[in-house]
Amino acid sequence: MEKGVFAEAVGRLFDSLGTLLIGIGAVMFALGAAGGVKYNNFFPIDDLVGRAALLVGGAGLVLIGIFIALRNNDPRKPHGIKITYPIKDQKVDTVAVQGSISKKLPKDFELWIVRIYPGHDSFLPLRKVNIEDGDRTWVAPQCDVGGKSGEDRALGAYLVGPATQEFFKYFKDAARVHNRWMDNLKVPKETADRYLPNIERMTKDMIKCDRVDVKRL
Image 1 (cartoon, helix red, strand yellow):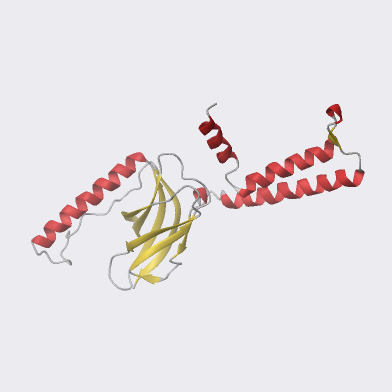
Image 2 (tube, one colour):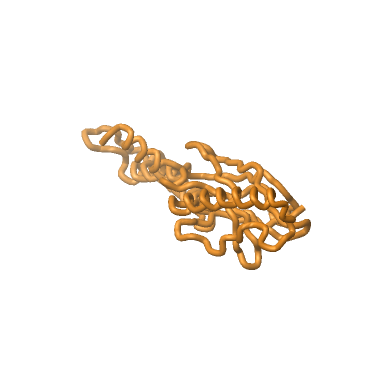
């Protein structure tokens, strides 16, 4: 196995504190249960107190590790991706959406922030979030919730696969060209169909991570 592949495999295995604690705890428990490593008298543990301490300590670490792993792998928050700001029902207009992440992004996926229209849940892509390996927090600047003062909106964090990435990029390019023409033609912003229609359905390679309901300032 190539060094880089081995390092990636090890990194994935111990990519969370929970997994690491489970591994250490399991080794401690096994040593306590077996009385150490008695092969060739390598590391015998004959002291009953020492064995009991390993058993109890190992079991404790395993339980703590399981708790952390379950928290980090909440199916409602894939990859531990959460929106931490803004908070529910906060009044905002253009906002830097902030959040946290506990695992590496899956291969070929990106994290995007989308604007969601409550009621029918149509949406528009706003911004791709740049996340470097090892980051545990992220920021998506200049996310405009749109609409008029007091209107309900939601901001969603989604993992987006390759097909949707291309769709989002095309949609944003099309919206930019369309809006420029509307501006050049001096079409009033309140005119019906002034903007491209919203996207009505989530695509197959979109994974919902988190969502926060807000109000337009």
